[in-house]
Image (cartoon, rainbow, N blue to C red):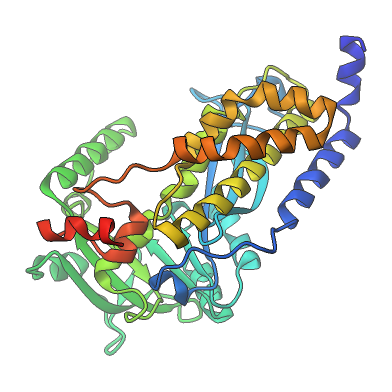
Length: 388
């Protein structure tokens, strides 16, 4: 087949076919999957982590996938995704232009949420109306607080002086009931959890804030600089289900989707394409996303079984790299038959698992271990993992 003939095959029909294939892969769940068994996670049907990642593409595509322009690229692509933590799978993804703000896409979040779910989002998706909708569904949310949003006392309905309240706190963790938002139709009653950060972290935040403000020709307010001493979280999860001291590790679960984006870029190279053709670009992206779904499904199956039986975890990053090392062998076998590729992978799995296990550190716990056992506080607790 000639090069020109190959290019002609990347048509709108090919895009529709690849998109349908990706939807089919996402919909075919493994019925034997169980969830990660941890008591605190058991309160929620699913834990949904929403986030996005963007990258620059050929400027020729600026009319279909526009970018921000200026010092940035004229064309860019953004991947909106949802990662379900308890079963370790991609729940859905969608390709949009790079200028599509997360705040606008947040309005689609409730359509993916079911009763009993817990939704984790970053500040890009912060939206009081969306949080209210999630609560109406019978689900839960956990998010950082957007600075500047109005906070009310649930008893007096008077405005809360947040900075004044924080100055009175003696310890490192404090919780209060609040109403978020000024519009009565969209107000949400929830918990505000105030977590003091270390001096080094606070100073790093202030340096970053000053730098970003200088780049915009502004001066950061004293209010924002003082709030850098705290991590402020809001949630509608009951306190008995999510104690204040466990809010930080729960929110740290968001890093799983960051790891996903890192691997599909560094290993699957989803952000690298030499084409200026829209149809070909989408076919390449959908093909790489299908591969990402399959790898995550493999990781989820092994990781859940390891944790539930041995309290061990499988590194997502290591698994991606080990599969990458075997990519050409798998491709050659797939060209012969699917069964040969499956047989090879089954034979390799024991070696993959052995090489991809997360190492145990006596002085440090993973996020999942913290949620299960709590943070390490005393030397005698360092032996708990060995005894588990």
